[in-house]
Image 1 (cartoon, helix red, strand yellow):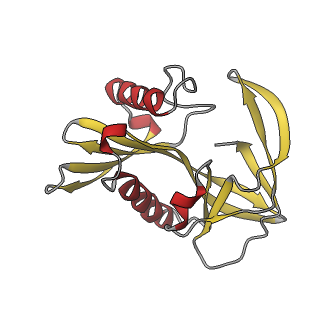
Image 2 (cartoon, one colour):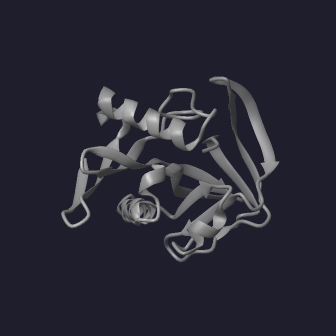
Length: 187
């Protein structure tokens, strides 16, 4: 667990492995996710699968922002790469436009570097926000992942996620992004 406090803003950024979430923190995440993504999480603190950990932004004692993260191997073409995935970034509506999302992303970038990630990856409907953090939209990619519906595995799925999947290369090595095998679930 890592904490970074900013006394001036009252913001605390906390990095927690999933195994260290308390019931109260898990509940606060569930409430925030349900608020930010109505009709999606149904009271859960995860969508399809629990992430490996969370990066949380606390404003005084209230949860103001959330991001899940996942560290795993993925296949880009024929290359296996260590990937730090960003999952379900959200900020409480009254706390937006105060730099909380940026603080979460900067913490994730530092955490990815510490984890020796080759790349960071996320799936989004709002790519413009992430470009200022070095993410680029993958314009043509066939992506394969383990399909999960209603908390049941439904098999391997392959689909173009052009325009929705974004990558940030961490070690200045080009990735063949035309074919991505997530070797697991889709964030």
